[in-house]
Amino acid sequence: MTAASTPSSAAGAAQAPLQIAITTGEPAGVGPELTAAALAGAAAHWPDAQFVVIGDAQLLAQRAKAVGVDWASLAASGRVRVQHVPVAVPAEAGKLDAANGRYVLTLLDTAIDGAMAGTFDAMVTAPLQKSTINDAGVPFTGHTEYLAERTHTPRVVMMLAGTGQRPLRVALATTHLPLKDVSAALTIEGLVETLRIINSDLRRHFGVPLPRILVTGLNPHAGENGYLGREEIDVISPALNAACAEGIDARGPYPADTLFQPRYLKDADCVLAMFHDQGLPVLKYATFGEGINVTLGLPIVRTSVDHGTALDLAGTGRADAGSMVAAVDAAVSMARHRRAA
Image (cartoon, rainbow, N blue to C red):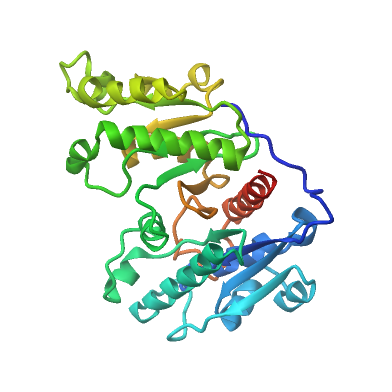
C-alpha cells in the first residue's frame, strides 16, 4: 500500500509551533505513562510542535516514573505543559473506578473544545474504558461516535493505519454495531458519503494526491453473484458506481478473505471494510504496536492508539509506547498538511 508523503520535521521556523493536545484517557490504564514515554523525545522528534497534556498533573508525574521519565524536566523543556484536570478520586493502576468516568469525558471535552476553537491544531487520545463511563451513568459507545456528536458532524469514518514501513490503512463503513445490524446500516448514500470523506481526507491530511480505495464486499466471496447475499449487488456496487462518477477512484467489491494480499494492496491507499471485525483483525495483525486510529470527516484532526487500556500493564512500565508515538507523529504530520493547505 502506497505511503503518504510525510513532511520532514524541519518545518518552517517562521511559523508558530503547532499546538497538539493529548488526552491521557482512563486513569487506571496505561494512557498516562504512554503519554510520558511518547513525549520524552518531543524536542528531538517534533521540533515544530508544542504539546498540551490534559489530565491530572500528579497522576502524570507518578506514572512517568514507571517509564523512567523525569516529568519535571520534560515540562521544563518548554515543549510540554500540563492542563491540569483533577481526577474525581485517586486512581490506582489497573483498578477501574466508575467515579472517574466523567473525569475521562472532561478530558475529551477540553481537547475537543480547544480544537474547535483553533487553540489546538490536533488532538491525540490515549485509550479509555467505555465500561467505566457507562457505569458512571453516561451512555457512551466510543471515541469516534462521541467526537461526531460533540463536533456536530453527521458522518465520520473510523480509519486504522499502520505507520512507517507498514502504511496499510483500513477504514470502516460501520463501526460499533452488533453484527446482526450491519446489513441494514449499509446504504448507497451512506457508502458514497463515506468514500467522499476518505477521498477528501487522504488528500487533505495525508498528502495523497489521487487516492485509490479498494472496497470489500459484505458477504463471503463478495456474495457469490447473489447466491450468498445481495448487498453487493443492491447496495455496494451502485455506491461504487456513483462514487466513480464523481471522480473517486473506488474499486470493488472484493472478497474480504482474498483482498488483503500485497499484490492487491501495493498500489492502494486505503481499504474500506464493511464492518469492524472484517478489516481490523487484519490491520492489527499486520501493524499492532505501530498502528493508529484516525477519525476522518471531522472539522478537527484527531488520532489515537490502536489498543485499549491494558489494565494488566498499567503502572508496570512494560507497556509499549510505539502506537502512542505513532499517533502523536501522525497528528503532527496531519496538522502540518492542514496548515500548508
